[in-house]
Image (cartoon, rainbow, N blue to C red; front, side):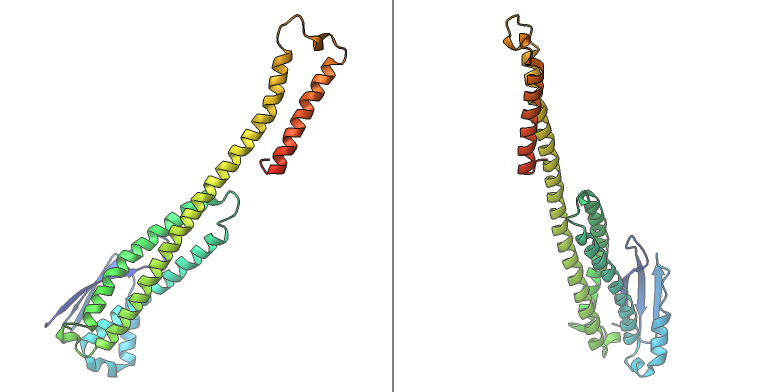
Length: 247
């Protein structure tokens, strides 16, 4: 029609929490009005581009809308690169001993950030699709190929986000498995030491019973023999547990 109203989600590449602002754009035949919300980023680069390539303005205000959308979409790519780099760093330490719990916390934080970015980029894909195909608004007539380029970029962005989210999900499952394995290893060690001390406790309990007729109590070598049996049984169990990897 005579006017197009578009709301774009504007990511902040410098934010650790993947903050997303909004820019509302009103486009008519002879004007383009943009209003930013929760964002300090400007569009001076868009103005410079239009001034540098005045022939492109023959497409009218529709090209300015494309230039604004293209500038917004380009700001998603650095965040995608940061997410991929952070994920690669976590994956490098995914099998480090004792690092599983910390990795899970970092992965969940990264997943929240990618979710925010996915919710921001998803609607833009639909908007770009309507502007390059189907019933194109009159003010955007002649700029369809430019909007197709934006649509292609957004398709890549959404695909990359989905890939990152899938990889994060796999990494979380692997880390949870590592936590289970570490807990199992701890349980095995505790069980092994408990078995070693159980033998000495059992022998000490037997010889500590208050019976009058216990041959070992009257034997001159009874005490050192008891210590030797306790030590040898513990040593044998320790060796066996070490051999099987329990200790």
